[in-house]
Image 1 (cartoon, protein in one colour):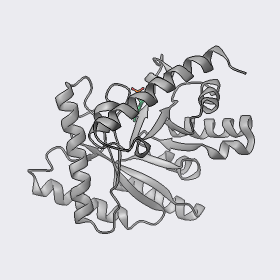
Image 2 (spheres, rainbow, N blue to C red):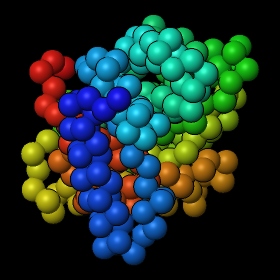
Image 3 (tube, rainbow, N blue to C red):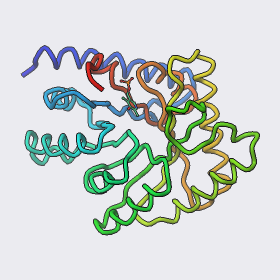
Image 4 (cartoon, rainbow, N blue to C red):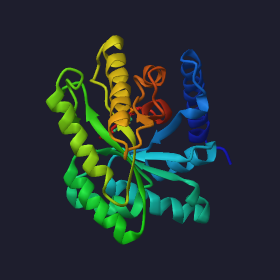
Length: 252
Ligand SMILES: *Cc1c(COP(=O)(O)O)cnc(C)c1O
C-alpha cells in the first residue's frame, strides 16, 4: 500500500541519496562509505513507517525519551523486523537520561562530557552492551553549540592536550566504543566557513588518531539538510538529515 506520504518521502529519499552520491563522487569517495541517518525527531510514527517501507533503516532522534518511545512503537508495528533498524541518538544528553540511551540507542553521536561518558559506561556494563559513540566537538566557538572545546586546537597546545587527556580517559571506559568525531556547523554560515569547520574536524580526528593509540577515529558525523554535501566532500561518513527527507518541522 502506497500512501501520499510514502510517495513524497520516496521522492525526497531519492533526491537526497542522489545528492549524496554526487558529492561523494566529486570527492572521489565511494558513496557506500556515507551513511544517511534519517532524522525523524518530532515526526509521528506513520512517517517512520513510511521511511522504513521506502528502505531507510537508520533513524536519528535528538531526545532520549522520544527515541525510546518510537523504538517501542516500531516494534509494536513491525514485530521482529524492527530489529533491522539502527537507532541513533544525535542530541546531547542530560545525565538523568543516560539510562534510556544505555537501554535503547544503537549509536550515540553527541557525547560532550566526561560525566555523561562515566554514567553511560556503568549502565552499559550492567546491560552487557557495547555502544558505538561519537565525541561531539565544538570548532566554531558558537556558545550555543555543545561539545568538547576545540575552537583553536591547531594553535593552542593547552587546549589540544586537554582534549587528548579527556578522550584518553573516555577510551578506557568499558561499554563505550569511540568511532570518531561529531560536529555541528555554525548556523547560516557562508560555504567557506562551513567547509572550514568540517575540514578542521577531519584533521582533528586524524591528529587524535595519531596521538591516542587506544581510540579509533575513523568516522565523522557531520552535515545536515543545509550542508551535508559540503560535509561529504570534507570526509563525513554519517550525515544526519531531517528536513530534506520529511519537510519543515513545526515544533522543535
Ligand atoms: C535536527 C538535527 C539534525 C537534522 O537537521 P535538519 O536540518 O532537519 O537536516 C541533525 N543533527 C542534529 C544533532 C539535530 O538535532
